[in-house]
Image (cartoon, rainbow, N blue to C red; front, side, top):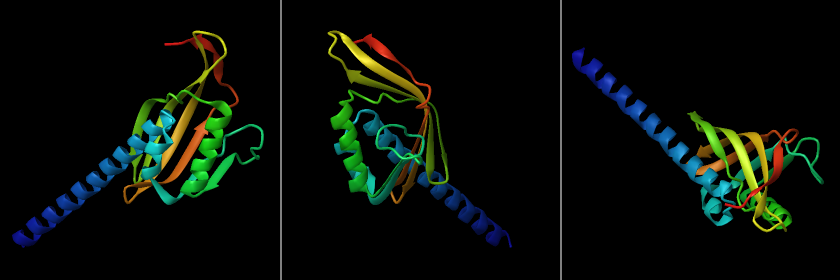
Length: 164
């Protein structure tokens, strides 16, 4: 009986450690992915994306965006959408600052702000677009399978800031 209890306790400990490792791996992948996203580095994002990943931003507004925001199925479609954004707006960075990051199951939740910087024609200044943001990144088998953004597009802080 004592051996059985000891074996059971060992099995539970090993399972808990494996689960903790999965959570750490998911968070590591999500953090690397979001750092690349923040830097607008699609080359660094691409190898972290599953071929069938989904990109959603149901809060997105703007020309050509429907009432349900942005939805793209697949890595290629998601990267194409991001390339279109880069071509249209030429962001220097999205500049995410995360106040809180936590993992629940295979989802890594980032809460904080987007602090996007864009070039301007004014020497020594950038345009900053800052808004509350939550991003939920789902990681399975070491790859991002779902990216969800929720930003406060309706009430951003925006204006010119000095170049740094």
